[in-house]
Length: 147
Image 1 (spheres, rainbow, N blue to C red):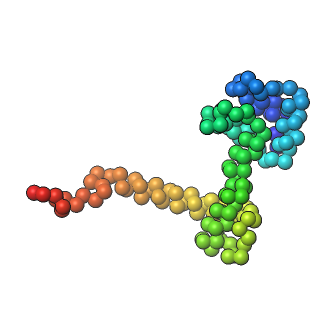
Image 2 (cartoon, one colour):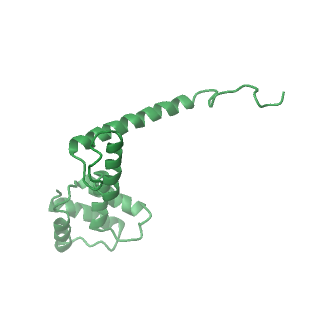
């Protein structure tokens, strides 16, 4: 949970990027109440701010919803991510097939799923590195070429 001082820093950063962001006690208190149940730290919130102002929605005002959206995506706690994780865990046999598709996976299963995905990502990177060597894709010599 962020402190009032940290939220003030976040709003100050946002005001440097958008002249319509107001930094005062009322705004800071409102953001503090809105973020009190959100597991976010100052660095994550700053990243959400920078992403907002450098992304496609840069013309819109920065709001609490932008911070919450970043956290739910990073924590894989939005509905689409939960459903994708459940499907993936079922396919890998980490949970029972009867697990409800909209229920968040237990932390140990989420960790195992992350580990498996990371292993698969690294294996794919290694395979890609093999494909980037000399004569790759496989050099078939003169097959199919006129001599």
